[in-house]
Length: 493
Ligand code: BG6
Image (cartoon, rainbow, N blue to C red; front, side, top):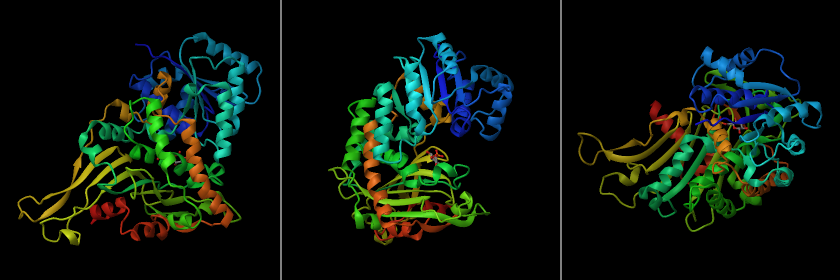
C-alpha cells in the first residue's frame, strides 16, 4: 500500500532536523516504512544550492541513522528531499512557488513540522492558512518548548488554534514515542497481574529519572533562562507520570487517553512556599569529570561572565491526590552532566508484612520492583526474590525477570519516526492535548515563581556526580534510595 505523504520541516536545516528527524526518516525509508513517493521539504532561510547527497552525508556523519548508511539507498532518499528557501514572517514569491509544489498532491496527507522557535509559530501558521495549506489533509506538529509559562503556552495554543483545529494539531513529546513507554501501557492494561497491584495498597513509591551525561552542548542560547524544570519536568517527566498513574482509558484512542491523563494532572498536589523548599532540589553543574574526562562548569560552557541562576538538575517529590495514589510519593529527577545517560521508571512495591525466612526484616528481602527502562535500551523487568539454587530453602536472592519483547522494526526506528507516521495517519493518541500542556505549566509555574520570588540560586554539583546531595536527602529522609545508583553499585561490585 502506498502511504506516501508530504512532510515540511520548518527549520529543516536546524539542529532537531539534523540530529533526530532526518536520521529517523532515512531509517524509516531504508526499512520500507516510508514509501518512495514521499516528499520531504526542508525550509531554510536560503535555498540550498549544493548536492543533496553531500548535504545528507554530512548530516548523517554526525547523527548516524539507526540502520547504517548504504549508498544506493542514500541516493534514493536524497531524491525525496528538497531544501526550500522560505521567509517565515512574510509571504511572497517564495511562498507562491512552495504552495504550488505542495498542491501537486492535493489529497495526500501533508505534515507541517514546526522545528522552529515558538516565536515563529503564529506567523508560520498564519502563512500556511493564507496559502491554503491548512486544509483537511494538513496537520501541524509543534515541537517543544511550547511556551515558557502558562500564559505564553495559552497564547501559542490560541494562535495556532486560529489556523488549525485541535484534531490537526500534534504537540510532540518524543518520550511518548519510546517503545518501553508504549509497552508500559500494554502491560498495565492487558494483564490482570499488574493492574490489581497498581495502587497505594501495594506500591511504596515511584521513581522517574531521566539522566544525561552531556552538558548543554551548543544549545546554550536556548537553555540559559529555560532550565531543567521547563526543559524536562514540565513535559517529559510529567507525561511519564501521567502514563504510570492514569486510570485505564475507555479505549486506546486519543480522547480517552487524554481524559485520563488530564485527571492525573488535575490531581497533582500543588506545591507551595516552604513545601517547595523541602521537596524540590535544583542544581547547576560545576566542573568535574564525566567518563574519565575533565569537563567544565555550566558557566564555562556558556562562557558567561555573570553567574546564572538556570538549573541543570531538578529532583522533586510529588503526590497525586486521588484514591489510587493517596500517600504514594512520586520522585522525579533529571539532570545534565550526571555519570550516565539513562531514563527509567521504577515502581517499587511495599515490603512483605512478614516472612518465615530468617533475616527478612534486616534487609534480607528486597522489595519487588518493576522497572521500565526507556534508554539507553528498551527494557522491562520485574525484580523478585527467589531461592538461591542448590542452597538451603532459607537462602534467598534477588533476580530480574526479563519482560522484553523481541524488538520489531518499529522500536529500532526510534520515537520520532513512530510519531511522524502517527501524524500522517492522524492518530493523536501519543500526542499532548493543549489542556495537558496548560495544566502542566500551571503546576510547574508555581515552583518557578517561588524560586524567582526568593531569588533562589541552584545548588552547585560536581559534573559526573548524581547531583546535589540534597537530592539524596530527599530520598534518605524517607528511608528510600534512588534505584539506578544502588543497582549499578551492586552490578559493579
Ligand atoms: C529534549 C531536551 O526535549 O530532550 C534536551 O530539550 C534533552 O535538553 C533531550 O537533552 C533528552 O532526550 P533523550 O531522548 O535523549 O532523553
